[in-house]
Length: 246
Ligand SMILES: Nc1ncnc2c1ncn2[C@@H]1O[C@H](COP(=O)(O)OP(=O)(O)OP(=O)(O)O)[C@@H](O)[C@H]1O
Ligand SMILES: [Mg+2]
Image (tube, rainbow, N blue to C red; front, side):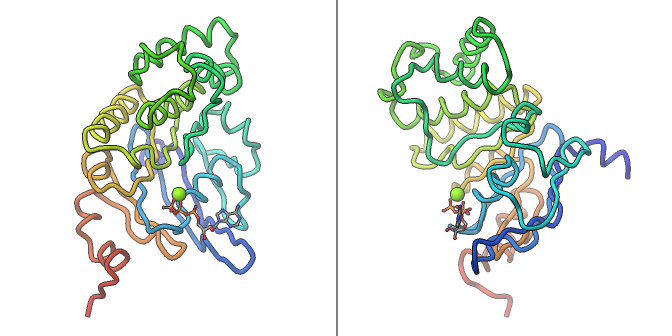
């Protein structure tokens, strides 16, 4: 068993959260393995973003614990978790509009990874190559189109030097070709040794871009397994199509 546990980088145990009478997460359990891309699907309002906010410390769960590299980080602050290696993107990209692409990525390095300005700049240039924004470094973020904003969002997350990167719908609103680009980018990030949790509604991203898929619905982890098996499961059809098992 210890062999298996050594491969676990993050573990969510019995996570629950309520907003008044809205019991968004009742009991969520899952593990993220080292060097894995774990896809997360679930209907609108299922609590996927809430779960990311709990993992990063923005929201406090009403119950449950989060183990990161075997340690309970449930009470660590947002910046501490970021320094410890949990990076994220936001569902709605929110770059500093009046800063350049370079400066936006540098912010992640200076505040997230505690780099000096010089180090952060070198790192930002390298990240810009990775995310395909190397020719747009001097542009203001406000000038970027949606794909580039999503790329920048990923770049800002990468600049914090994460061991785990949490992606919240980075493919949303993109064209087929652009989605293909994001799938390749996530693969590349994984090859760099980063574990990824990737929330997305687009089926193709889950089938082509993840190692396992977790279905979140009714406040619980319903099923988790190989992407194709999960996508074709009766649990997924029941949740999305309202079908039942007769
Ligand atoms: N800070 C908050 N205060 C009160 N309720 C909240 C808060 N954040 C989220 N909720 C509620 O929690 C539920 C889950 O929201 P969440 O944004 O996590 O859904 P989601 O699964 O990410 O959906 P989508 O696929 O549309 O992004 C919703 O009913 C939402 O209104
Ligand atoms: Mg969401």
